[in-house]
Length: 309
Ligand SMILES: [Zn+2]
Image (cartoon, rainbow, N blue to C red; front, top):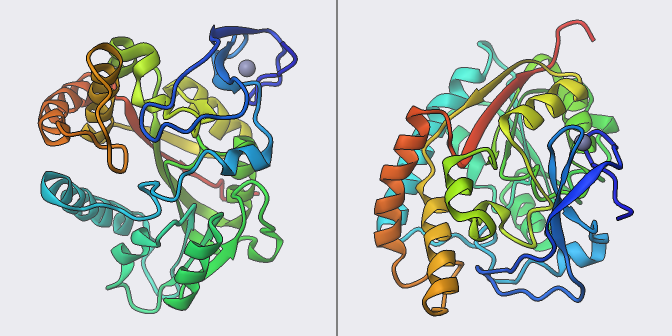
């Protein structure tokens, strides 16, 4: 195998899954991809590494991040999450005027709605999907077009109090470059806050190759608490904290994946099958249990840019 670990650059890697399947959107890549684990630092990543043009073909037009479905129980859970996120993000902003927030992978700009009541706040972000970036600009946000690991951040150095990064780092070809760019645009003492799937979890132990955290082929790597901390420290962050927000949606999708594999393949809309609400209720219980024992399938992270850089 010619790949190297994207985190520590070791060539000592072991193939864990020669091939995974896209249970959610049924995208069929033109060649086979699997998942490997680095024997030096334990990082999990897709192998072989896909080319940039292949990555874009993994995202169908109905992808849930492009157009969110907020009906029924999902809608209520999204509202609760938005309320909790608003409180959390506002607590991370410094006092005083001229606050600035940057969202990496800002999608349909839903995160910016959380800061609507903050007077005079600067809201900026980077988005790879050109139509979404244009729509964000039309709404008056400062949106940069491009991938998070490729966009030019040189004019944004030391400008942001808070960078948010939800469900992004696992999608990009070069996660370390994204963290370096993030560190650069933060003010000294500024905070990076985000979320991503965690392979060192009860959820992965139960579902293995059907685990929705692989979100195959759209997730190019799977972090654990330790590999995420290593990446953040390596990029130059300090005060790294791991958080455990409950996240029942990934459980629901994992249940659906297993049902599709062992019973029958059901039609889905935006990755959701016919039993989504039931699986979501069961998943809520499991995700609260995971939170209690710090074995969550989705983890939050928080890290600061050192004051002296
Ligand atoms: Zn490694």
